[in-house]
Image (cartoon, rainbow, N blue to C red; front, side):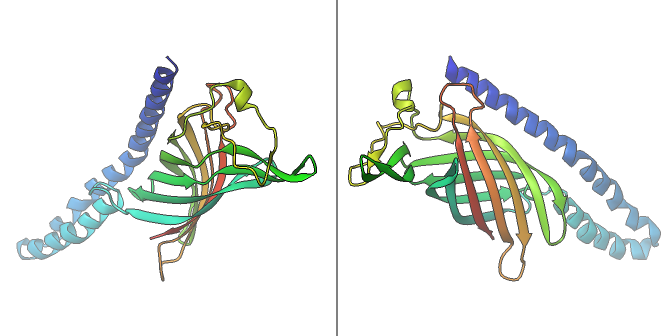
Length: 247
């Protein structure tokens, strides 16, 4: 029953994303298509072949690509580094990668999270830590909306859905077990993730891309959050920062 609820919510989010995308893409595509046929009528029969072909071959084609109507225009893969955050300390590291398309309107993101712990504690006189989550994979699909889009940089908001490959802790006693573990003992995860209440989640991101066309597309910095918005108990979520080199 809970999985069905999550699936319905994910479908609603995706439909809303598609609706907003269609509304945003429509006026630009319409303007481009109406402007393309204007050039051939200005010159005579002899000129229509040259200027007509030039207009349709150059401005028409370029306009189509810029509007995203010609396919997956502007595909940009990215690879980087990241770190998870909890309360007032860093809790772990991750390796993120992404690919954006249609002028960076859409993003598929994947990351491998290493084990997440609250470290630097002292328990019974010995160095200790609290285990939060075992190593896991995360996958997100998001729609991005630009706040500011300038030649040198742009800022954006991303909304989407996420899937985590690690089982959440179903037992509340295990889920809320924050007993420190001595550093010289093996990590104790109980085989589950204490941070996330479900495998299927929502994804939120705030980002800034700084363009540098000399040696790459640029650098991208993101704050990201993955959670199920309180649809299940124990929903603390993943909070993390990523820095990506965009190609």
